[in-house]
Structure formats: structure tokens, C-alpha cells
Length: 128
Image (cartoon, rainbow, N blue to C red; front, side, top):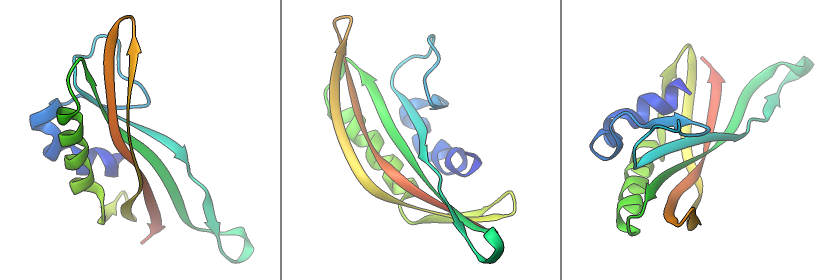
């Protein structure tokens, strides 16, 4: 999670300020927001069942309320620019990321339209 927040905060500030949340947005958050969710994190095992790497997949998306599709598309492009082929050392681990899937959809809830645009990113974590 530290890797994602570190890579996303600066490029997304102009769009969402500090409204980048894990799993769900707080009920009092304003729009737009960015949400990231862990979908899976299988381990790659070496000899003796030693973990050599974790290959996590995160869904990361922009959500807007009532806006057209351009704003969430722009935010999703900034997410992709920050994360696709990103790497770095965080908390003693070497971390890489790349997008494996993209998506866009709309939903209506209580008469309001919400737009979701983003991607699924593989985040590989290796010991240094």
C-alpha cells in the first residue's frame, strides 16, 4: 500500500487532492475520488516453501459523481502514467507494477450517476 500511495499522491493531487482511499471512500468524502482494492496476492514459493515473491493485483479507479466521462478518463490516465512500468524500493522490498486490464463503467444510485474508470495492476514484491 505504501508503494501505491507513494506513486499516486503527487500525480493525482490536481484531480483529487488527498482523496485516495483503500477499499471504500469515507461517507463524508467529496468527489472525485480514487479507490484502490486488493483483488489477489498469491505467493511464489521457492525451495522449502520459502516465499520468493508476492504477485498482487490491485483494482485502482477514479470515481466521479454526475460528471461526464472525460474527468474520470483523465484521472485514470494519470494513474496509468504513474503506475505502469513503475518500480522502486519500499520498506526493504523491490516493487514493480504494470497494468494488466482496464475498465470503464457507469452506475446510477439514488438518482445520481457515478462514473468508474481505471485499471487492474499487477504489483510484484520481491525481497531485496
